Length: 367
Image (cartoon, rainbow, N blue to C red; front, side, top):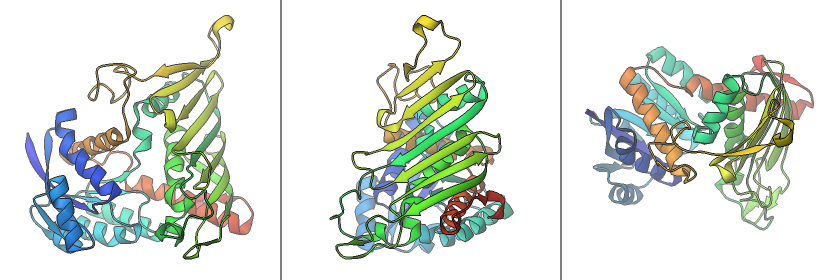
């Protein structure tokens, strides 16, 4: 059992989640590498010191270069704004330090490509944070599909819908400025990643991207509120997705429906410990969607709880990510989703935005 010094860039919402995960992952999964919270970085010295005390880091800094270059920081977690991702990742990779970066990977497709190429050139472990696909239920859905339990996939519908900007009177903020912070930059990547994980590569897309509330108290809105997208997968399956931050009543609407030739699957993150399964070969008198409550028989559930139906939560998804990142470092082999996988999501986002502008289908290979 060896210690590894962890440096986290950002101490807010996701920074805290990763700090808690790194503190807990050794006990939950009995990992060979045991994280040591070495340094946290925030934009101001005062906030950095506050995070250090709150989360249990040894040291704090307001300069990301100090953290990245510190010899006691052996692996990097980037949980800072997208526009900072590229510089931090490239500097860390050049030093041979493994990097975990929150989604979306960089602030643009150019950023994500540069980060991906830097990681592959350096041969250093890298990983992107798409936590929702790691619920035991969604991992089980992936297994059911891989095992052909619902046959060949013919159709996919996915959404990531929330309502944190449904109220037109909500004031403008950093979330309403710049496309990287809009719905296509913020919410869409999660469901696109899910589609890639569950169904496979996407060949082409047709999308409409829209700003519904173009003015808010405090300034103009310069990014999108919601978007709809049709897609055709490389497998031949049809698909459609919807993304929204103005979906009144939806709090964590990360949901999908998958139709196969022998069955179907439904999932909704607002009920994240359940998966709905339909099997065409069930006896006719009991044929219908069955609700499967996750439990110790499902992927990555048992380390958290021995009781079926008791459930896992949001923080547990981040702990599972931490386990995967540590395993990748231990084996010196990147684990899905890598920077390359994160870049693939950004390619689809770029194609969708281009489709909305051109009002026509876009081939993903053009991006």
